[in-house]
Length: 342
Image (cartoon, rainbow, N blue to C red; front, side, top):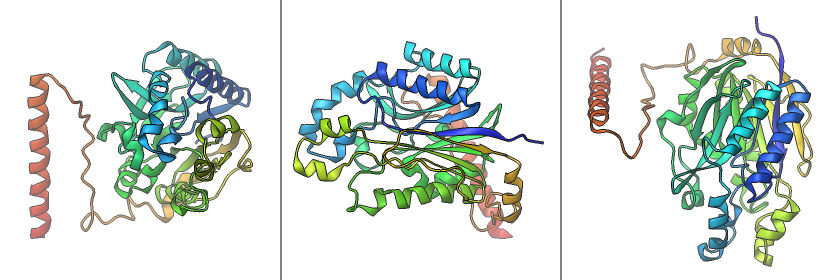
């Protein structure tokens, strides 16, 4: 029998373009969560060192002034900054899901790092497909990044931003019997009033629908844009119309889609804390389980390549991967023939 426990969604502005201060602020929030007996805290998308808003605001030539700073202040796996964050998780006995710009070699990735309550790394996933102009900054993840993990508090998975608008991506996660889902979002203050699809109404609904479709708890974290960020980035009247301060819409939803906890004001910083009980999932699943009794695999099914795809691998590993892929394709074709015959 499961026991209720507390979770927290972060709603706060990052320490923009300052890795040291960003890690310090993250640790302060983890400590605050720990003092409130929170068992899981979720951070917004690329919260360390902040979302690169300049890609939406002006010409690439204008945005080049931020490229070096963003690269230098992105976090590396195994660094002293990561060690400090892991220690904060361990010290507080709190599982942490961090939204980061991950630096690996000469490339950046939109990462979500899952750190266990013991301070050990559970996963470092990357956004499968950066959205629109995000692709001018970040590389892509692969199928190994669509993984739900068994943890001490339940089966935990995570996606970034508009990954929640990718039907097949969501179904791949649902199929792994996710219980707690972290939805990491940036601020909803870009093109406010001009691009409905980027606003809080649609994207909050995406988090809510994920909870109802997957019958899981969703912790939807959301960044805010600080006045300092606004003044740095919006140096002309047109940019001042494109991006506004605030835009925080952190939410927590139950497996029936119901909101849990009292939301913060959109300009307010802090933690949205709520108590959840995984036992509630069974009641939602009884009504509709789209990867179980409510599915029709004889009509529709998903093909999912969850293998990691590094750009370089040893020759023998490459041969083995090719053989395994051929076996998977052959088996799928045989299954299709069988289904057609039936």
